[in-house]
Image (tube, rainbow, N blue to C red; front, side):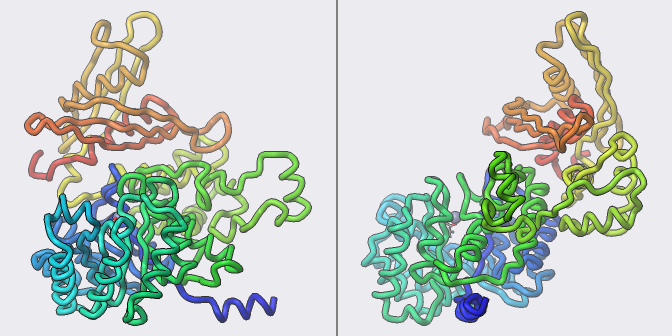
Length: 530
Ligand code: KIV
Ligand code: ZN
């Protein structure tokens, strides 16, 4: 015990830079609207992250506004805006961060030979010049400036040392080395950080950081190797979201450093009990499901199936558990509420799950909860999360687009071998629309029929690419949780985009219709389109 206290007193603090709202949002299908981003930002502050990268302000008016709004609400963490080393980008980031209590501008330019030659068509000297000018311009807006040499892991080490020295001299307080394409190995990550620490003369004037992508499944290992070599900041995302295969998962790097503090001798400000609620919140908002076997936050992360393991756990928990489920925010008793539970009990349970609803929303969710409790004896945490997710998906106000979203009203169907038919009613812009299909119009099973009916009513060029069904909880009365991916073509540009959707219902067909509508609604036009 004394040793533990001693170790804690010595533990180096690692800065946790969360980029769920920027790189995480670059995950295909993970886009969030502003109210959703604010909800995630508040949860990140509660979780204890040091820096929240809220967006790339110059990239779109929506990104600018989200950085601006996040800046207004966040207290207790730095808010960061991304910018290329280009005046317009930096000025946009500076303006979007004007109201932030602790603003940070993150400027980047690619430094690797491939990027210099093919993308930038610039010499080594020109890149350094641009990097230095970018850092100096950003320092005109705030003291806290971070610089990233994009594709840093594929940059010649001698040149990388020169770049890092120059940007620190220009005023960068954090220098982040991105493994942009996820090509690194842990040994290389360690060696690069060690080389920078040993060879850059002014390195003590900045914090070294890493930003690892997961293309080879090594993002977390690479980030930890960098920490072992002396890096002081990790860039990461909730659930490992991010461009392509994603970034280092925040929950994994944090728990690895904490559980193996005997190896890393570091710690963070993260309140680990908020990891599961934050993971669920991000999954609910982005519609991107957390795999059951995902480390730390997956539903099975602490589920012991083998008899020998169960026996061991009952005798002494540490035989098969290196962390307790409670330490990351799982609760022991998953069976929580029933038909007799009141509004206060539901509010308390929601709070415990990291979900805070204003009175008006709580009233609606409570009414839905009562309907559910009438049909289902045992209401599990997973049922409650599914209920709130469905509610947020179907009522979220995305700027002006709310009224242009398609809503499910009712359906009836006859399926089986003979004369299949379906009648579906949806609503949009305050008006109902119905369709009836039968006989030759219909092929395949009930889900196929429902999809055809949605396509007919909405007149959208959509294609159902993926369909997945999972039970929300155990038991025969479990609800169906359906994930879909639809492809939608743009008739003018011919570009095909993918949208994920999710729907929950006791009725598989209704759940499928709701999931398809959720996917369609992610691309809902502005209200004026009604
Ligand atoms: O992956 C990357 O290189 C980035 C930088 C902008 C940090 O996301
Ligand atoms: Zn990235």
